[in-house]
Each structure stands twice: as structure tokens, then as C-alpha cells.
Image (cartoon, rainbow, N blue to C red; front, side):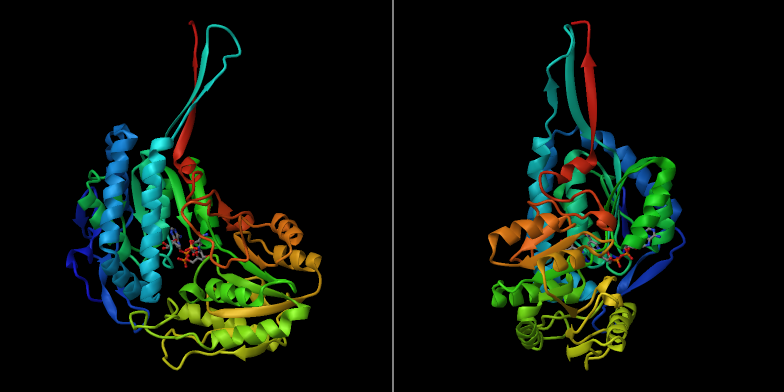
Length: 483
Ligand SMILES: NC(=O)c1ccc[n+]([C@@H]2O[C@H](COP(=O)([O-])OP(=O)(O)OC[C@H]3O[C@@H](n4cnc5c(N)ncnc54)[C@H](O)[C@@H]3O)[C@@H](O)[C@H]2O)c1
Ligand SMILES: O=C[C@H](O)CS(=O)(=O)O
């Protein structure tokens, strides 16, 4: 990891504008998933330090919310500019701690920064209402105010974008934030804090607490000063945090797991579908919440699609994310490798065939061969569980109705994709799919301008777009009488 600005590599937590250690000096090691070398450490904070971060945020809230939207936007714009000026260093940090190829890391930095740019503008468009009074002598109004201290808990797979997708709207709305990044990828979060300090955010408005999640999580979810929890991660942890928030009736937003179907109909543009399949399935080595998890291929083009997909998958370059040309980095840890292997083994035991890949990569460690399985059925684990790895299981279907039923047969409802050149089918299928986001002839659809989020057990609420700031606002009705 070669940084131009070494001050971006921070090994302390950030609370109330200060870089701090754990009170007991405890630390967690952070390793590079490509070679398991230790990159450094971060403090292992507990409930006491987390409480101090929450109090710092609460104390900073009045001055932050009383700044005008334009003043907040100016600081956010400076933060955006600083992130983009340091894009190369941030990408190096991200690839070192998360493993994704440098090109993908560069893209994520820009994607994450785009949420700050977008919500710096949205800050200035938090409008209220004046409602025609139902009786004489009254005036009826609605105003929107910042909800208060926001706790943001984020995953390892997008160490910058999952933080800014929450914190940008929160800060724009006038809320202070306490961020708990994933313990395996804390350095990008701490670099964002360093750049936020340079941008002029007042002390206490942005705080980053590092350490093992359980203790920190208990404080964030139970402390009454925290009015909003915004979580991105697994559905299992999301359900736990939802329960923990109940004691103080916290407002929550949840961005959870997925099980995306990728449907290809007989009338599809097959080369375009192959391009979309590679982009959707193998981005971040299959470790994204919106990765295609099931490929539903209509019988008439099944063999053609399988052959062309395997040819494209065999071209993918596996290696250290810092190496030029790498397209598939390592999985985040050995548990991820074991989950991928268990899905493949379960499928093959039940009759699926390995068309390409299927095994740990010759590079060793957590590298895995990009894989395509055929003959996959709904009885297999890979049909119902999020693989979160570079495995494309192909299912065969005959009719449109069968494809929709297969696609919707899951508790998840985040993203779905399908390829067709029939306009009527496009509308029928898009409206029938039970997912928060649908890609039609596109395999990558995430953008700051559109609402990101799912239904069913994939979450609550939306991030990004003109809707994203609503999660951090309270609506207040004013009735002025005696006029
Ligand atoms: N919907 C989305 O936008 C989205 C985006 C990225 C990842 N994800 C999902 O996240 C999962 C992968 O990420 P992950 O492995 O980091 O998920 P995870 O749920 O294991 O961890 C997510 C975050 O929660 C924290 N956490 C874990 N247990 C906790 C507890 N008891 N109390 C408080 N915090 C706790 C972790 O430290 C981490 O910061 C996948 O299911 C993926 O689909 C969803
Ligand atoms: O993994 C989840 C991210 O939200 C993926 S994306 O970059 O937003 O598509």
C-alpha cells in the first residue's frame, strides 16, 4: 500500500474531533485478504467509548442543525472535492483492506463521493407545506427537521460507499453521525473522517468508532440519545439490531441481504445478457448485495447462454487487487470461501454440473476460481441462500409465468434483472417481480440519483435519490390559531 498522503492512514478512532485509543489500549488487527499480512491495528472500543461518541454527537447537533442548508452544503462540497482529490490513495487503502481490484476501488470512491455531491444539493431542497386551512382563523403548515443523532453501521464489501450513502443525507439534513465500520475494513472510514476534518466539519458532527461490533452495537441501539439507526449488512444482523432498537423505539433504515434473479428470455440479446451477467455476478468477486445470485435461463437458449457465459468467465483474471489487469480479487476471509464451497458441493451432490471453475484457486488463500454451474434446481441451497462469491448457478425454465414464480420464490427482495426485447414482456415482468430494484437489459443499475433498497427481508427504506434524505427528517405539523 503506497499512499501519497500518509496522514490518510489512521490507526485510531475519531471521537469529538480527536484521534483516540481504547481506554484499555485494546486493539484489533486488520489484515490484507490477498495475502493475510497485517496492515495495522485499530482501537477495540467498548460501550463507554461508544457512549462518549454518542454524547459528542448529541452536543454537536444544535450548532450543526442551526447552520443553514447552504452552509452545510458548502462543507459537504469541500469534503466531496477532497475525496476526489485523494481518490488514488483511498483506492489503495480500499484494495489493501477489502481486496477488490484497484479499478473497482477507484470506481467505488467516485460512487461514494457522488452521494456527498448529490445530498449537498438535496440539503437545500428540504421543503415543507402550507395547507389550506379547514376552518377560518387558522394556518396549517408542515415543516421538516433533522431527526437527531444517527448511528450508522456498515459492511466490509463497500467500505466507502456504504458509509457515504447513509452519512451524506444524514449530514445534509442536519444530523450528526456515529459510524461503526466493519471490523475488517476500518481504514477507509477513518480516512473519510480525516478528510471530513479537513473539509471543516465541526468537532462531534462526524465520529468513527472501531472495534468488535457486539458491545458497540448494544450502546448504539439502546442509548436514548441515538434517534436513528441506519444499518447495511446481513439480514440476520439486521433482524437483531431491529430487536435491540425496540427498547427506545428508534427510527431504523435497513439495507440487507439479497438473492437476485437474473432472467434471460429466448428473445433476449444474448451477447448483451452475457455482458450484463459478468458485470452483475462477478463485480467485487461476487461480494455485492445486488449480485445476480440465480440465473434463470429460458430453455430455448439455455445451452447457448451457458456455453458463452463459461467462455467469458474463463477469461476473468484472478489475482491481487493491486496487480494490473486483475478482475477478480480474493474473498474477504476463509469463512466466505467455505460458504462458496458448501454451495457448490451441495449443488453437485444433488445433480448439478461444474461447467467451469468450482475450486479454490491455485493462488491459494481466499482466492477462488470463477465458477459456472449448470443443472441447478430450486431444491439446492444456492437457490435460497446468498452465495456472496463468484458462482453463477444456471436454472432452466420454460414459460414467463414459471420464471416469475421462480424469481419471487425467496424471502429476499432487493435487486432483480431480466433480458428481453419484447416491450410487453418488459412491463409484465418488471411489475410482477417482488424486488425494490429491477434492471431491464442492464446488469449494473446502482446510482446516487435513484432510490436504492429492497422489500421483504431485504430491508426497510431507500438510500440515495431525492427520497434518501427523508430517512433523516422528522415531519412536524404546525397549527397556528387565533388569527
Ligand atoms: N442492501 C445493501 O445495500 C447491502 C449492501 C452491502 C452489503 N449488504 C449485505 O451485507 C452482508 C455482507 O456484509 P457483512 O458480512 O459485513 O454483514 P454483517 O451483517 O455481518 O456485518 C455488517 C455490519 O454489522 C456489524 N455487526 C455484526 N454483528 C453486529 C452486532 N451484533 N451488533 C452490531 N453490529 C454488528 C458488522 O461489524 C458490520 O459493521 C450481505 O448479506 C450483503 O447482502 C447489503
Ligand atoms: O453491496 C451492496 C452495494 O450496495 C452494491 S452497489 O455498489 O450499491 O451496487
